[in-house]
Amino acid sequence: MQLRHIAWSGMKRRRGRVLFMLSAVALAIGTVVSLATLSAAMRAEVGDELDRFGANIVITPKTRALDLAYGAVAVGGLTVDAQALTLDDARRVRTIHNRRNISAVAPKLLGTVDLNGTPVLLIGADFREERAVKGWWQVEGRMALGAGETMIGADAAAALRRGVGDRLEVGGEPLDVVGVLSANGTIDDQAVFVDLALAQRVLAKPDAVSLIEVSALCRACPIEEIVAQIGAVLPHARVAPIRQAVAAREKAVLQFERFAWVIGALVLIVGALVVTTTMMAAVTERTQEIGILRAVGFRREHVARIVLLETMAVTIAGGTAGWLAGTGAARVLGPVLAQLSEPVAADPRLAAAAVGAALLLGLAGGAYPARRAARMEPAEALRHF
Amino acid sequence: MPLVEIERVTKTYNGASAPVHALGGVDLTIDAGEFVALMGPSGSGKSTLLATLGAMSPPTSGRVRVDEIDVYTLDVERLADFRREYLGFVFQQLYLVPYLTAAENVMLPLAASGMKDREQHDLAFGALARVGLGDKTMRLPRDLSGGEQQRVAIARAIVNAPPLVLADEPTGCLDSETGAGIMALFERLRADGLTIFMVTHDAAIAAYADRIVRLKDGRLVEAYESRAAAAGPVPA
Image 1 (spheres, one colour):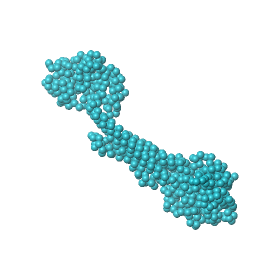
Image 2: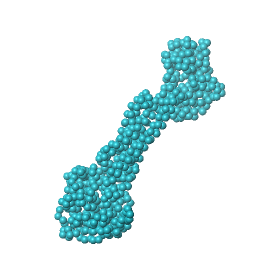
Image 3: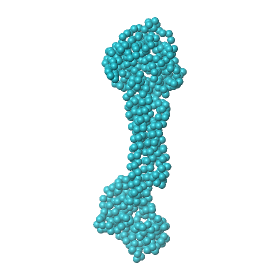
């Protein structure tokens, strides 16, 4: 017979008290798990929104004068004082420490050209990268894929009288119009999109780019860090995050996370107090039993270990039950409380954290009762001599 | 060389209104293999002396030596080790752990020593067989009679073969017939060489001992060889 056997036998005898403590721990851990799961799911959804939104970092040359605008973003490439961006700058973006979080780097060169007597905005782009940062585009036809193809904005298509299947000559090079962008109220409506190399040749700016759009997977990284890292490798450029689209949602998530931390901490404190009071009551109830153990030669550390073994066994079980209940609650409550559009997934790492937190809770709550039990003197405990 | 040496032991408690002098300078020696009974009226200090000898209540002054170990120079954890290795306790109230079987109760001193399960099992079953409970090893205390529970307590006291067994009114809660059976068991243990120090207020029970000492107002006032010891072993 080992100490754990005595602890287990004692727990079996006091099933009611054990169940009460287990329920309290499960409730505390379950509450924390459900709040943490909801927070994580909400943050993931914000990350998804950012990803769907497309580019969330824009790199432009450092300049005070903004001569041309692209959407809401100033394009400095057309000013004379700025150091122009190059394709090499686009390549250097993928050398930062958090490069695994970079999903697309889309360089662009912008300029105006006259096509058949109609002035239009010419945008040279890397179509493969562009597809990744412009997932939200609505295109009649399809996205352009290579050098012999072009896409045109809705207004430009009307002005040029071109549609899908037509041909358009740019810089003396005939291009197939494979897609027409639906009007989206941005400068894209007036643009003709061609391969970046063609635009550089037509605009006589070899190797130059006006701006670089970067799509970073922000679910797993703070975007400010990525911005800082890009800024470090491109000191001559201005690197700015675009967060406005989901800023309000992010703020709500942040507030929810703070609320979750506070509530979680309070619940854990209450849980630890329940463990303490329950174990104190158990220790008091077992005064005579502890006296017997001490009289027959159990050391103080043996008695403390028995109390802590019981506490930890109950809290581990409570932590596991709490994780299951908390995850289940988050699945049910997620769509209702947090307007989550996707079901909340169970996180095994959170299970380990829940059991670890329960163990800490058990140690914190059981330490004082264990100490008190250990310090009982046998003669006093037995009230015999 | 005596197994137990109690030298000028005093014990004073802080009473509500005035100090209580429970022991007033007790000197006593017990030889190995001796069966000594301590008698005295209520409040004479019997239980205090037993607790002091049992490494559970340090004296205010004086010294307790068992097997040449100065008991109260040991720290609190070593005192626990000393109780486990040198002493066996038999209490009037039995003090069995109610949710452990007879065998598990007997294993308690062994569990604290970290002994392997198999070895504990063999020793506990052997001790229970020795007290006549070889067929009731797996019973819980509530399923045993008072006499059987006291036998379990005795088995627990002797399971790790301590040099000294301390018994406090071991027949106090038993009827006379069952009590006689318990005393016969003590007689056999003494015959096997065990040293026993027993507190009792019952002269008939004390008569089983080799020597009877009397305590009054915290002082030993009388010590004599018992009639039974003089007459020979008590029949079982």
